[in-house]
Length: 121
Image (cartoon, rainbow, N blue to C red; front, side, top):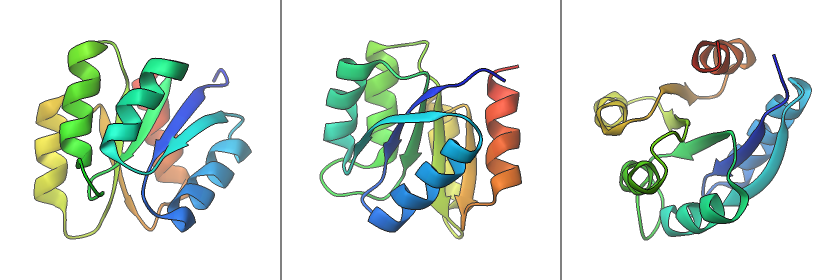
């Protein structure tokens, strides 16, 4: 698989570090991070990533709304939701809003790789 430019959107520094490490090990490049949905839309406009990993629960704008806003402006955007167990109903809302897949925390390398491969096959 080609190297992807990735925008990580999460308000948890630990999640950002974990995702950055996993994505880097897979040969992808994290080109920007954002800690809120509002910052995610601004970052997307600035860096036009190949892939966005999006947390659901964040301050000021949740990940579902941020995903809808990104897709409204950039219909070809590829967004993967990254969320905690117990938020499966929220994940389904996100998929209906246009997210291409999801990964549950704690993030497993194989699951992340499989979701990315499925989106970019």
